[in-house]
Amino acid sequence: MVSIGLFIIIYFFICNWIQIYYLFGNLIKPKVRLKIVNGKGLAEKLHKKTGLNLTIKSMPEENKMIGFMVSTKPFPPVMIFSEKLYTSLNQDEFEWVALHESGHYLMWHNLKLILMQFCILILGLMFLNINNSLLIITPLIAFLLGFIYIKLAIILEYQADYFAVTNMDNPKGMITGNIKMSKVNQKLMGGNSFLQGLIIAVSPEERIRMAEEEIKRRKKIER
Picture 1 (cartoon, rainbow, N blue to C red):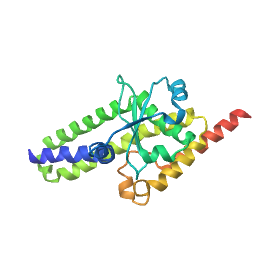
Picture 2 (cartoon, rainbow, N blue to C red):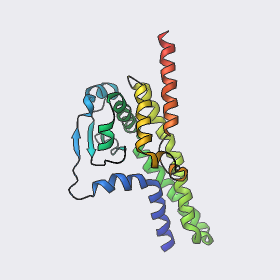
Picture 3 (cartoon, rainbow, N blue to C red):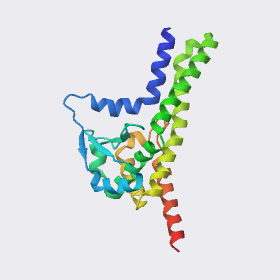
Picture 4 (tube, one colour):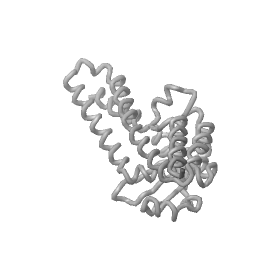
């Protein structure tokens, strides 16, 4: 029973460590208040593009540029960004991250991720139940299943990035935004290949490539 409990804790931590550390870690700090922000004047434009009445909030995280869509349908869309991200990006760059998070909401990604986590967990528990001799290595199995979940979840990140880059006014904002984020989030998004492998995100280099391809596509259409 202890081994199964340890398996569940390790598995869920591997799957959600970014949210645990950076989202909940900031929200539980004493006297922390989320501020509702105007989305750099993009609220009306985003509504026309997505049909969503977005609530955009910032949290007092001054070291990392991070953002989360914290709700799913049928609840109203709420996205939370770090103060560092909100104050560092210009309008085009912020449109990219806001459309990215909107894409998660429109495509039911948070609900899909929850279901995916529990399906993999159940499969893992069934596997351990059948192979009792493997209980001694439950931490390793939990880590491996969490790693598999992360790699599957990145598919949804590609979908959200594709939604953003094809709907934003200026795809160059996705390029410059990722350059800024890769510098600020250097420990998360580059340099540490092990840590990078545990992040549910498309790499900055791949996002820049997507934006460059979208710019080329639009230029061909204009000809």
